[in-house]
Length: 446
Image (cartoon, rainbow, N blue to C red; front, side):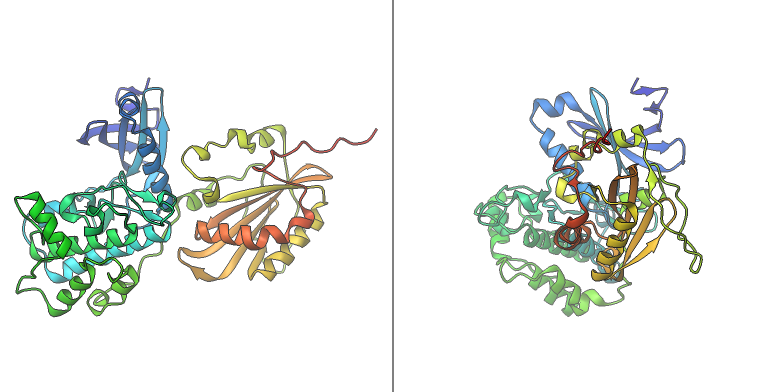
């Protein structure tokens, strides 16, 4: 049963209906074990497949896995049965920004705070090669603390969607918030199009109405194409100047997110940007390690020789690529772990890992249970990059080494792994898992 007495898959207690569309319903729910409130989007597989939207659903889930940020609605997990897909997300109970603006214009300080959070979230999306393409007050939620959360990535695009000209070509979005180049149907830069939508949202928050609004759709399009809007008298001069740079009909000269964040109006009263969390890294750090002994860092001055974790048949099966389901919603080049096998003895592997780590500016810290923690000295976009290297003993002469990002930025980890660490370790590698399935350990000679 998918839902017996209001309990979904024995994990979530379903509550009231929050909203619904043609193919999905969104419910309030509570995690039975943790009592955490969540929102669950229940998608009807048959309806989605009938109209050919399954790829769009997969893309939306993939995007949400990429953009873990304090001002973006967080994806917790995805579950499925034969007839339904259940997308479990952060529950944001403050309602839409649209409902707040519908009551009247916001004070400049309040509008600025929401705009700071919006631009910070969108800048982060763009750094991950994600373009929202449907930014509007209805897709911006407010939590109980009054913080803004970007939602609804159903029309989003990834950088890989660009054509050979380096532009996106699908016309989508809500007319009043769409950039002029999107309407021209000649291709557009997804980042610049999102920036335009952010400008329209800022205008709406400060004015209480749209900058481009006409009963006749074609007349509205003409005004958008020329950026024909007028700021009310109560707009500050700094806000006017910034809006003129954002709502520039020429995407080439339109201001960037970096330029917005450097503007004097934007910087006023700005708090330090919150450190982004990586949900998967958090879960990995607190979870148990397969075959490992866990434990914290070995106390300084009492360091013991690092010993590899023992592997049994179940461990080997569980780490096989055939049992890895992440590929359903995650591109291979965005994964947070990598594995290789080695025919070198454990002390040789450990010594080589330490040498390579130091050359790359990583500080190695030995941990119990065959785990070595490697940390960078400086912070990246999502904090300090930390990598766990765990050595598993399959046989005394055959080891499997797993690298897993435990904190920091996934793309930073991928760049470091591919460009630096992987080439430096080739002398101890027997085979890479994923390219060729991990081979069985060599048989001992009789």
